[in-house]
Image (cartoon, rainbow, N blue to C red; front, side, top):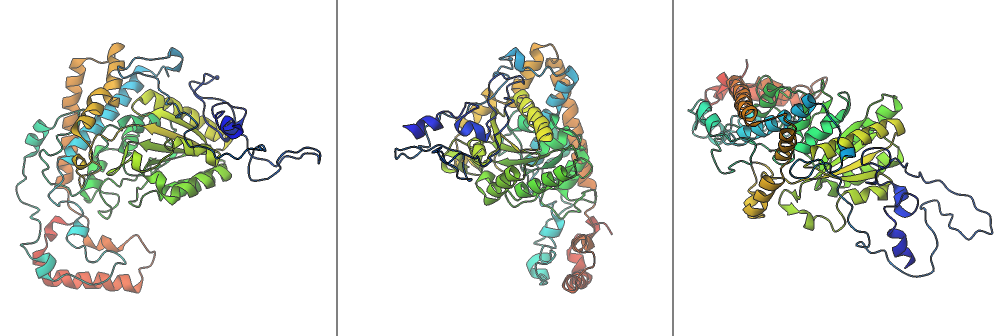
Length: 510
């Protein structure tokens, strides 16, 4: 049983896989996190009389019994938390002792995000968004030069009526919009934007991690990290402009909704392909290391993205190049409709870290303080030691994957209701604040009204704005426009001159 015994020592800092770098959840000088360093593999030198392995590729001992390592030998990696579900601190030494104003910012960021999610989700089905892709879609850069006939795409009968009366006026929509709780997913759906992805249930992972970072730390998101931007004071008007693709959209209407980006807030623009941000983030972290920039990179992804090959490449490069990066995995239970039971057979994502030589920890993602503590310590050590960290935040995706998904087809209402009513990060933090006299029902009522008003004002303003000029379809890719792209631009110009009356061009900036 030599191999089994060796594997069973996983949680000890001196032997076995402990060398590969788990952040142990023992009290060792820092809140909840071990201070032991990973043992970087170095070839040891033994005398010829020592019968010890000297292979450069692994750190191990010889055994004389044939035995395969069983995947279930090790008990599951524990989940670090600070608060219970009622917002009570379990271990006073783990309380981050954050000032009241910072905790209030946590709460307001999480609830404002929740309100924005609800209003945008319920406004999803009227094709006001993606003007270039839905109306002028046959000519995106580099995808061919064929243009639609008026009968196929541009005839009045097939065009969305962008000036028609809304299904619900904005005040009515606001009045019917709830707060903090999950949406009535099949209600309203007014159709003012074409696509949206909510963050319901995962707000604690966003805000807790964002608060622990330096404002200059570079963020690579997947598509469900809007709370990170929210905490960094990204304006509601910019969220709305991006989702509407109007003239104020930094992406000029050419990106999918919820694909935010902000250079000033060090948030790299989101791209749709899954997990491509992981190796990119490692490259950015390596550059920061070489520049002695005293900053880290944090890379967010879901447990589904961890199945992509890019995740393997990113983990391995980060470990071997010793990059100051935090891999932050939101394990929310589902990769669209695929549950974790069908995604992997091992113990989640944190268990993969030691195989790459990455310090790893699993935290309760619905506990904003646990996320904060883990991220803060990981950031401190990543900067000081130039090494990667892996944080797996266990949470639950209360909302549908997106407005294109109906999760009732693969999970029960009872399952969703449990996480919404019994283990929601917002309600847990609210309990904590109320127990300290920092929040009460009157403040809650006033904040609900104020936050809804702020979101609706930004929402209505975004609807009033014009769409970007169609000529911007062809800009910002090449310094000098190539001949093929210029030919497409000329073709579009001729098409609009001939059939312009069939397009709502008065809704576009001249």
